[in-house]
Image 1 (cartoon, rainbow, N blue to C red):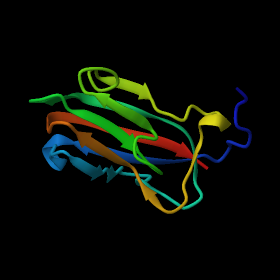
Image 2: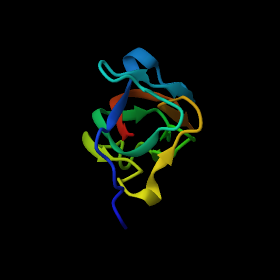
Image 3: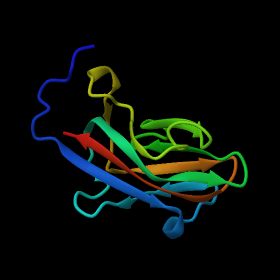
Image 4: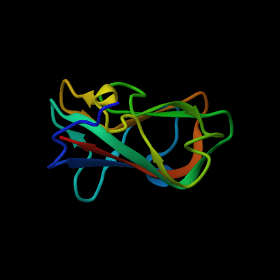
Length: 134
């Protein structure tokens, strides 16, 4: 796949989730903005890539699933059980898109990064989502 041209001047948006601050109820949670770049994406942003940095693995008393979205639910990270990737180990994990035109996401309005917790509530976990856009 061809790499997207014109990726100079990339901006970043960051959102953070921390069970101790945000809770873990089955719901959609808007991620708290990062300390520098913020978590809002302006209308017309083209998200080219990014990552999830898991600091504390997610846990649940049940079979919780989590997805990450920007323009649409689960467009950055598909719904995934916390017992598997990317939630079951610490470290950095790639999101969709992966710096190709075919996987880029364009916002149709101002958007915030968000997660959707489903099936069961979370009982612990901490991570941040960083996306790069132009």
